[in-house]
Image 1 (cartoon, rainbow, N blue to C red):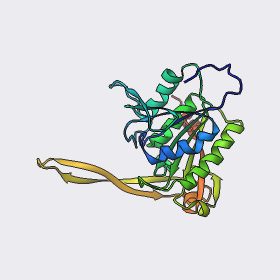
Image 2: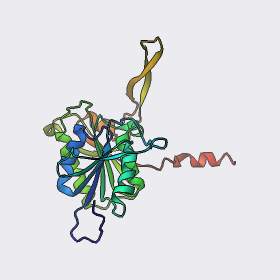
Image 3: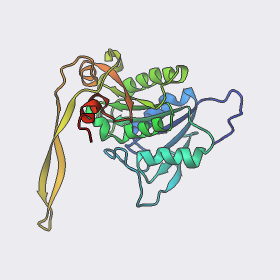
Image 4: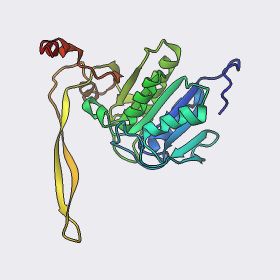
Length: 263
């Protein structure tokens, strides 16, 4: 990857990653959608890493192997998490050249509401925001391996064009979710807030061949938010949602309450 910032008419550098693995259909669709906008570098996990959140590898060595998955595009598969991929790209592969945009996804399954906390897709985008790189995580409300990403690609192109042509806020990323609809059925794109919705967890307890119990995490997603300005509402009504997201998790609205403790 060329690190010479003095090149004239240099195309925007777009870093692409995901959490479903470098061979997933979603990342292939994302690369196809963003390729016309600039120079592409792909660094993605060599296997599925869904639900890893902002995990990083501290006890295992990281491996990085050049990949030929994307014809004519520089790509690497990493043994690490999505956040590891972003760190490796910035620190080892790019060194002196900073990406103009980081895009993550397209995830198989939506990352609306509190799902953002568990999402490897969005954690990669949050890591980009921490590095002050304009970053976007894209997710489709369809878990199928062969999901139709046509509508998602339409949304990706709209969002990426705006990200590259507009002033992007510092240390913020975008959580973009696309409903499972045909491109012609997509009603539009809405700027939203994160819905107040949670997983009601449960575990499926089973017994292995040795008589020992093991557990599969399951549960139901419950929405407790009746607002019509949320990401869940948008998705349920045929709109793609965009939630501006930050890594500062300070609960500013209750700081005065705790100051009253007079510690």
